[in-house]
Image (cartoon, rainbow, N blue to C red; front, side, top):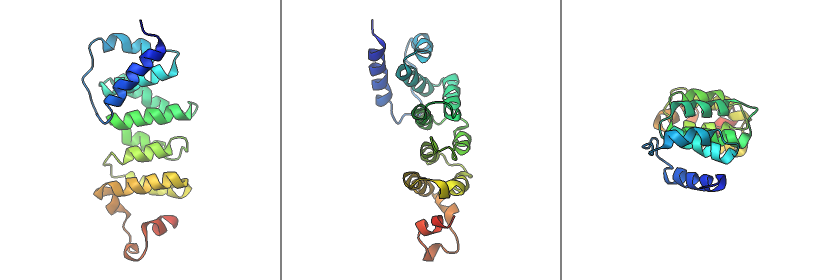
Length: 173
C-alpha cells in the first residue's frame, strides 16, 4: 500500500509526463480513486489529483479549480497552480476567469500567461487596462501575451507605433 507521499510522487510524475496535453484518456479505476485523493488532507495530493482530473475531462474538477482561482482567501500558491492547470486544459470559460482576476496581484501573472493561449477578442484591451499597475515581471508576461498572437498584437497599434517603442506606448497607459 502507498502512503500519501508516494501517491503524490506517482501522480506528480503522471502530471509531468502529460504536461502540454489538453486532454488525456482517463486511466482505468481513476473514477474510483480520484474522489478520495481530491478530498485528502494532504494538500499536494488533492491539488495534483484535481489537476489530473481536469486533464482527464472531469468538468467538476475544472469547476473546483475555477473556484480556487476565484477565491482570494485561498493560498496564493494554490491559486496559481490551479490556474496553471486550467491553462493547460483550457476548459470553457477560461478567458472570462482570467479576465476576472487580472486585478488580483496573487494570480495576475498566471492569468496573463494563460491568456496567451486563448484567442479572445477582449484580451488586449483587458491586459492594457491593468498594465500600468503590474510589477515588472508581470509586465514582461503581458508584453509576451500581447505579442503572442497576431490578432492580439494587431490591437496594440496606434498612430504613434512607427515612432515609439512598445514599452514607451505602454508606459503612457
